[in-house]
Length: 231
Image (cartoon, one colour):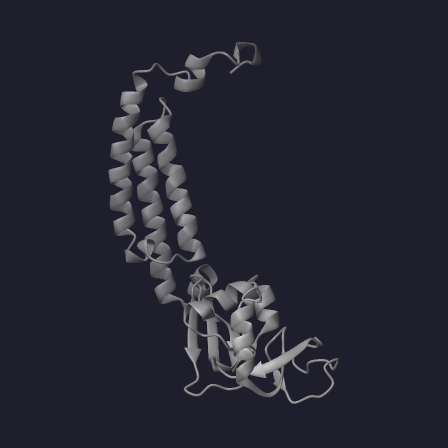
């Protein structure tokens, strides 16, 4: 649209666009049609599309949204064009999944792989940073599973789809308490469950040390708190 045709008080253009108002009824029909087609294509893509998505599956969902938007809204775009592109996206997705089943390396390339965030009660700091997961995100996931001490955690995996898989020890080891710092009451109660040694606040490693300025042998940080057992 040329600049000289734009007026800030042109409410008809602002509300209805260049198309006549009757086109809104057509948009309704287009939307219903593309919605039904999108439902069919999403079902044909498999049940994974309704679960926790991997990066690739999220990209596919965003692409589907972009595909159906133009045929629903743009007067000079036909519905069959959008439907054809949806079918192409379906075939591409099914082809990638099929090839992933046949080739393990290709599957890891497009789907990603699980990484270890916590091992034997110790945070794998390098992995945490490379995956761009904050400690608060990790602690929130653990607290959601009623785990309040890293000493109880055997493994935490970050799956390719972004969820945390958590495995615990049958017996609690001394570790770093992960209660929120703002909850002073529970922090005070947890002090009654002190264990031998100090816990590194950066990685959760427990050492029997006297000098609280000593560097952690696991991560190199030098900030320690009293280790505790499970509350």
